[in-house]
Length: 136
Image (cartoon, rainbow, N blue to C red; front, side, top):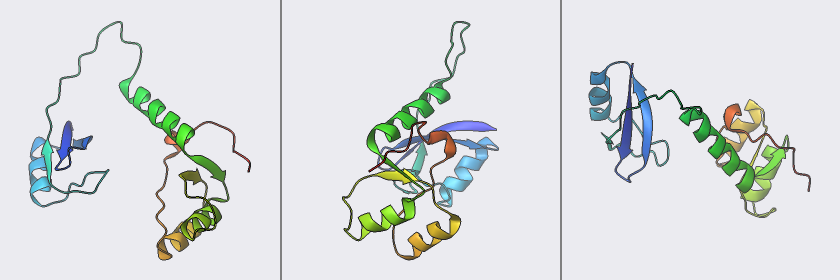
């Protein structure tokens, strides 16, 4: 396995793992790698500094990144709990104020939202803020 820092044509950077170094070249040439931010498929390797462990390093950079993302979601999104599908519809149709939300939905509700043209993405549990649900 090999990890590369990649960059799309819009300068978004992201890391990706490949089974072999040649896999990046093959997949990029066939347009199989897409930017997770903008879905652009014009991808190139970005400069990457080697990771050097020191004995005094106490934090994991991946844990730090997850913590920052979790804090950003907690600070900027409303947790609507199990009412996610209903609130997403209300926002989409103009019956509720437009804002960023997160919560829970069933696979069936997620499919229905998609069929209605309502954009919703799954939030991995690891990124869900560890806060209590906000009540309106």
